[in-house]
Image: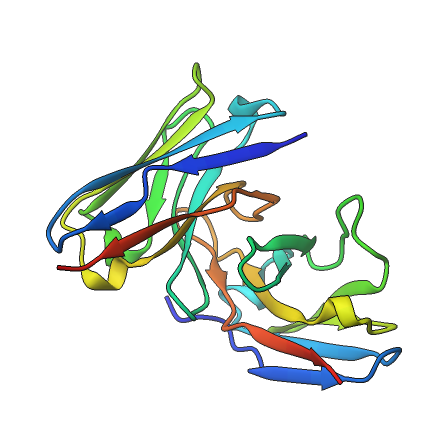
Length: 116
Length: 111
């Protein structure tokens, strides 16, 4: 059974940093692109970043370029999102997703709240 | 990076069929065969319903079907059931070296 379990969310002040983690299991992690998708409260879905299986290519939505960094540890079957210079409009549930174009499996999500 | 356009809401009675549209451009929906559809119940993570325009993952009911014409993709739910009441999102590939794009989302109400 495919499982994606996110952790690391929480309350952070504007300008602060947070690192999200995602532990993958139940499939061959090294075969697939991985992504982060977010959903602001009461709003729609947004692709945030994705990363190639070997980590050699990474893409970001314009609003997070230069602030967020996606990475992966294939030895640990883990995906990460380092978020710096956080802003109020980054407040959202962040989902770890298997796939770069089609989100075939989703984690349960972790809530990030940016507020003073 | 504008979102794809979906109707805000669609409703139907049990047993009926409804169709949700997803309109983009020749740079996304119209240019590739990589449109997917997701169902999201309140407080839950989205679930993949359709991938590559018209393919259903294992375990997804055949009441859900997808199609595409020019720059518009569509999701049809046949034999509408109470459990289909949820939010639905489309997504499309937009080419290499960039992220995909989601639709604005459609709330389906079963009357």
